[in-house]
Image 1 (spheres, helix red, strand yellow):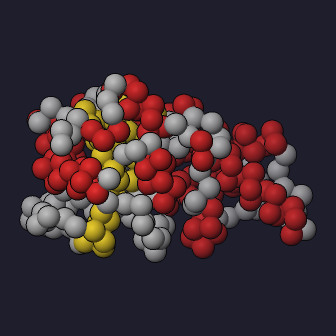
Image 2 (image 1 turned 90 degrees about the vertical axis):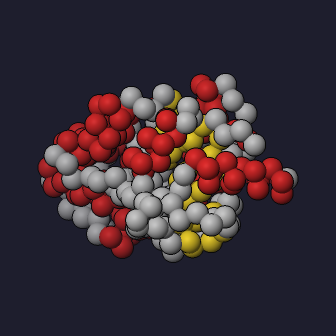
Length: 256
């Protein structure tokens, strides 16, 4: 089976960013004089909610229902979301995000073999560009020839066309691609688009079940630092490579 493209989710997959986003939210709350503070327990409950505005609106509704406080207005929520994105970009540029193991290696190996690289993110385009530029460098961000972000999709995540939009950009069929994601929603979205999925859970999704994934691994691994297999068949590989991804789509096609 001919592999033509790899589509990376960005937040949590390319880099472990959840706590960076959480810190950016908390700084934005402080700047707006809001008494909210999202600790890891609260953020773990909000993590499945995609898009910053949706997280803020849900939390505001919950605080109003609890009678704790009236909460910010819709206008204030939009301002907080905008400021949070600015803070996140600043943090990324300051080097506070790091690539997860094996990401740059796999991208370079894939480009060397003529594969296309795409990326999807439910963060804003500014945040995504800042993160990728900070972790991959300006040369590295140029490796990604199709990038789809929150601005490219409806708020209803169940209908988000991000993976399909990348396939359309590349003009390829879904069985010619592999998606790499860290979340159940992201993995399900790729599967709905007909794409085989490799999952590397992140800190807030480590306990989730990824039944839709072809294989679930601790990370992408390095030749000297192998990944840990969580679920699925790795065909004897100890780090993710284009050869391994070709075998994954081959197994998916055989099982269809």
